[in-house]
Length: 161
Ligand code: PNS
Image (cartoon, rainbow, N blue to C red; front, side, top):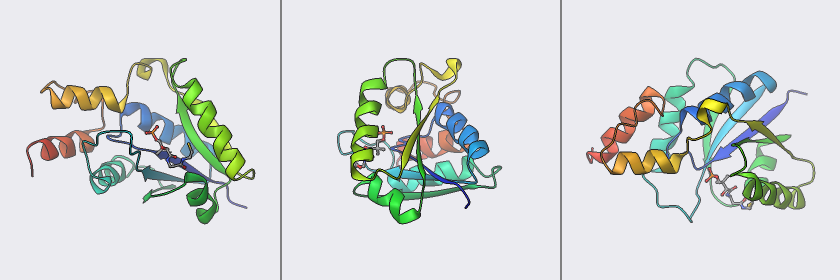
């Protein structure tokens, strides 16, 4: 049975930290679906379509990655896709409580799907979509924090194109 994992997130926008997790997940699983979810608690910079487009262009060199988007419950989406795992990146200590809660809820909803955590690389431990969004909105240089296609899409979104 080919091993399929879902890597879900808001990806608003995809950062180099996310890309590193995707590349490592691509080596662990036969197929990885990067799924853009809608987190209503956050103020979006990019539309789900713009986020998915940026991810697609950033993973073109990887043969076993697909990109989609989902609404509603992650556990239901993962089950529909036939995934055996949900991949999440984990930075230092900041993410632990939220991730622990999410993994526990998702296991309650579907006990057959295992959440797998990949520790982010040390050099990406400070990086988050929220930081990139803030720098971008305040006119700073975010080009070393995101893949090149994503930087272009952010610039287009900010200029209203
Ligand atoms: O990158 P993020 O913002 O941490 O991603 C969060 C996301 C989209 C993966 C999460 O909010 C999610 O799974 N949303 C779907 C709703 C859901 O399944 N909620 C129950 C599990 S907490």
